[in-house]
Image (cartoon, rainbow, N blue to C red):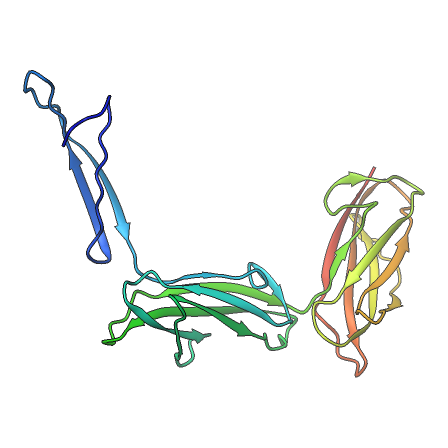
Length: 234
C-alpha cells in the first residue's frame, strides 16, 4: 500500500470474535525491506452493559441497565441475574433498556451479577458479558463544612450533616460519632422529612479524625445497613 509522508492507513473488519495479529514491514525507494513490526488485539462480540444507578455500590431503589449489542445481526438479548435462568428480550436497533429493582439485602449489603449475551435470528449466541456490582441499604452522608476525608473545619466549628436514604420507607436516622481513639458518643435519632432525608449538627470537641456512623429506620422497625463517614478536623 502507498505511504503518505511516513504513515499508511489500512481498514480491516474482523470476521469473527477472537485473537488477531497484524504484521507489517516497510520498503524504501531502493527496494530494501525493513524488519517487521506487529500489533495484536482481541475482537469481542459480547454486548456492553452500563448503568448510572448500579455501579460499584448501588442502593435499594429502581434503576436501569443500558444494553448495546456488538454482535452483527443480533435480534435479542438474553440476561440472567445471579446465575439464574436466562430471560430473553427483543433488541431495539441493537439496544435495550433493562429496568430492575434490587431486593432488600438481608445483611445490609449484597453482591449481584448480571450476565448478558445477544442472539441472532438463526440462534447464534454472542460471547457473554458479566457485570458485577454491589447493593447496600445504607444511607448516604454529606456535609458542606466537613467533606468526607478532607481536613476541614476546626475545634468548635459546627457542621451540618445530611442523611439521604439508601432504601425506601426511611422515617428516621440513628447515628453516633466515634473518634480515632475509640471514644464514642451515645446514639442519637433524628427524623426524616417527606423525601426521606434527615440532618444533624455536630461540633468537634478536638482536632483529629472522627467517623459518623449512621443507620436508617423504617416505621416497622427495620434498620438499614450502616455506613461510616470519615471526618478530618483541623
